[in-house]
Length: 152
Image 1 (cartoon, one colour):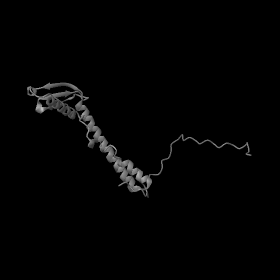
Image 2: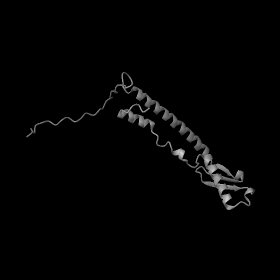
Image 3: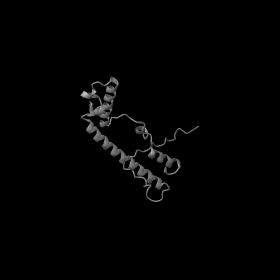
């Protein structure tokens, strides 16, 4: 039977003051130094690309704010779209007289696609989606943590 007079353990103390930083792993000897430097470079390159992509998206968005006009059938059909890619108007030239409904439909859809492309809202292609799941930084970190090398 245990003694009831035992004192309970002290609760953990909360850190209320400044904490000291751990040693910098990049100073001194570190067996993973090269892998860490490679990961750092990948992160920097990824961030630079993301910033460039963001700037490009901003400029496309600014250009798209007023909408766009696309042409089909060598200018015989013009389709105007708003900033969201919705049709706001269409103009048909005299060249469309005598065309079949299918020809006119195809020309109008071509003009619509042209306008949406000018907005940067074109149809997605498989190659647009092919890099969405690439994760070189995450893969390199996992390789480092699991001891499979530097991820190169």
